[in-house]
Image (cartoon, rainbow over all chains, first blue to last red; front, side, top):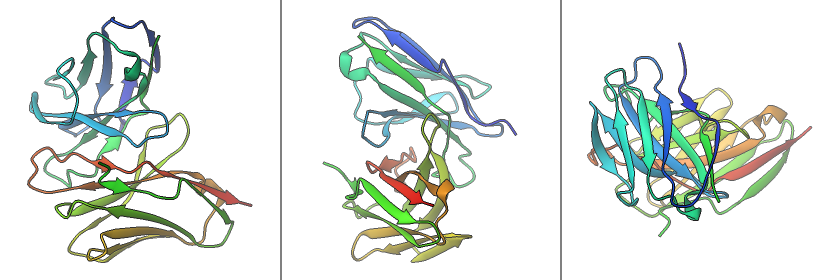
Length: 114
Length: 114
């Protein structure tokens, strides 16, 4: 059984640029969530996708957007990057029909904005 | 407004002894609680969970206790092993919220000394 994978591992962008991060869900999982983890903090919920639709959003501005594809892979897009967007971005997948709170995380993408 | 709090940033324990990690929450709507373990350069790994209808859940060396009246939960690791050295995150969720989002604490770094 393949776990959650994310790409790229690391990324450096300049303020004002746009970035796309990618995630492949664990086999058999149909829900994907994205979290932002700033240094010294716990992961913070960005949004969740189920059946290719956004299904809940945390306190993040609209320049954070996402997609879920029919194969349950997902993208996180961030426009107009700001210095405070520098963080570890985590993708987590789960089966909505199982215990949906038990989400399984990928290794993350470390984004640095300069 | 931090709804899940882990007030101890770090904890050191001798190998073979008990490790007790604490977590407090403020939102009485939370009804499902989880502990995750995170090693450097890896995503959080699900460890154990507990529903609010229970006050204890065990899985091998790991036991989670929930005190709803005090809005407090704790993770006990017995006996502690050097491989348990990691950052431990407490997370909470509430059913009926639709998105099954997890709210995390800031984490406690556990060091198990051989």
